[in-house]
Length: 379
Image (cartoon, rainbow, N blue to C red; front, side):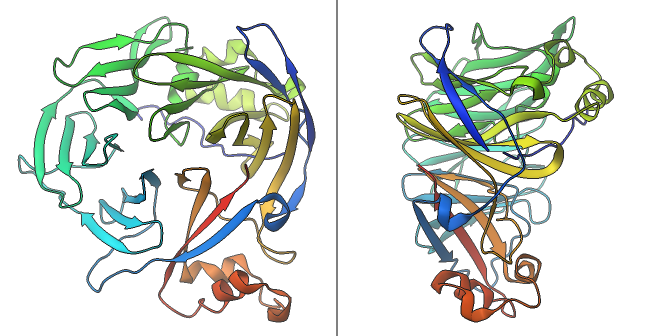
């Protein structure tokens, strides 16, 4: 991003869900409070997957994970500038690592997406355009110039993308969400979704989640609106109201990052819904509360109005918080854990006998050079 907006990511207690009039979509009315919940108390399923990484295949910190069918794509945008593919059991399937100046290469990975049939992966290199490769062989398909400054995108169909752009229109209004036809490169704005400056600038880190046949988008503002978008229509699923912790609407219109950050720091605030998982009628999402470092999660049943706020998730009673998920796979949240980070999760005085099977497997890997996926489902 050209303006560096606040990096803030999620916290939470019990909350209520009530019906309000914005179409038939419910309003999730929340009353955040500081709380800690063990992962096993919140999750309906937990899996620890060891990645099978062949010798010579390298990647660093994973900035994003996307999935399609049984395939997981892990993006290291900063160190190796690569995207590595595994199946859901951790088997290595291939790696895209084509950084360079050539016509079939990319300069950087600003964002990426997988086609609905999982046969094509497209990398966006800001602000030059798109480079597409076949899956699983990662052979170059096309390089397409596109000058608009995108923050994120997902496929809606094989020939249409959902994009979010912070190109300025006027009076701190941005282009925002558009449907982009890949053949004609004609972009059509999606009407009715907020395109205030701060709302769009915060629309790239996990606020857009691609599923097999639709995309979920959390539009941040005083009231966050959660949308389900397909190649045919846009549906408002719910509105999130943090009550007294909302950031007032006028602050979202400010063009300067410092003004918005000042508003967030002026009191106890909650905002920035992201990493949505949705299996009707249940929905789970992370959001931030009080400070950028807190990472918290809530689950809401949009049909029964039952809502549970779990606050910060921990692996065990003595461990630190569950590493923040880098993406989702179906209804699972996925965190990436490198063996050298395990010591930061479990304290030195950890009682190994108090750990269950998968926790002990992770703890005993701390002196290895392994990488794990922690996958957990809350719905």
